[in-house]
Image (cartoon, rainbow, N blue to C red; front, side, top):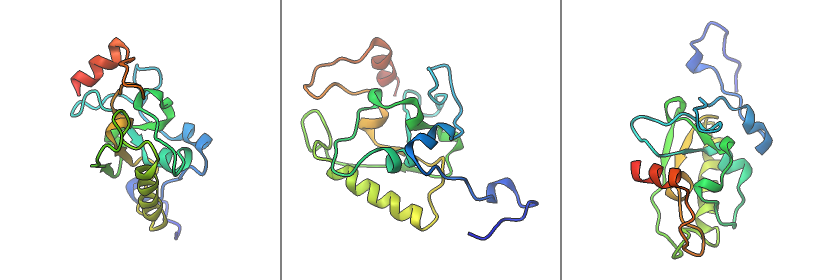
Length: 156
């Protein structure tokens, strides 16, 4: 990219992108009271938005995605600071997991890699994928969600 003059508006400045999963702890996201998770969005209460960069840097092709409550706080971004929001519509390929063989994860990561290569993926961009954004039951179908997680899901 060409350097942007210092007098350019802030929204035109190129964003620093994380280069590894550990770099994501440096991503600015508006921490809320929920143990370092971004503050909840008033328009979509109960939803946690996964950083596209986290999907690219920390998750793997061909492996099942983790459920929302198993992701670390650094996996989530804030909707209000995102340049772009991606919502994924998909079938569930398993009874208690949408992607037991990681096929959808591989496809999603390929699309995000393409956007990043085209310089159209910013550091704070977020993804809505229900399994990673809303509390889920475990792989055996047992509802091991906490009372707070159940409340968050009901609110969403």
